[in-house]
Image (cartoon, rainbow, N blue to C red; front, side, top):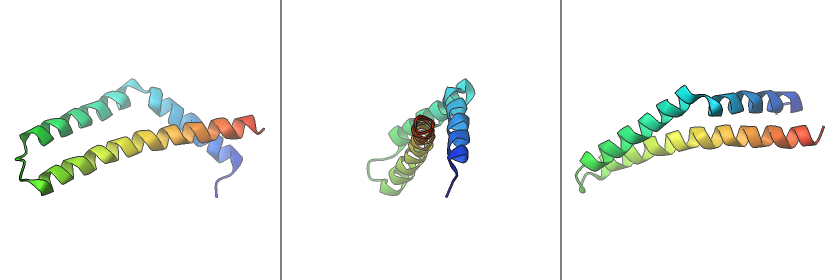
Length: 80
């Protein structure tokens, strides 16, 4: 289990990453590439579409995880 300080430090790092324009651009580019891949798959290509969906879910999971770390740090800071 993480200490209060580790949670706060992780939240600060996550906040920095969320504000990083390069990271945001890279994640946006991955999403756009996925949508392009999705559009180019045949409707019958369920495996291909599922792979694209999982990649999109991965990008979303990174963003959600970073936001959760920021939120958790904010909660810990309020409890100081």
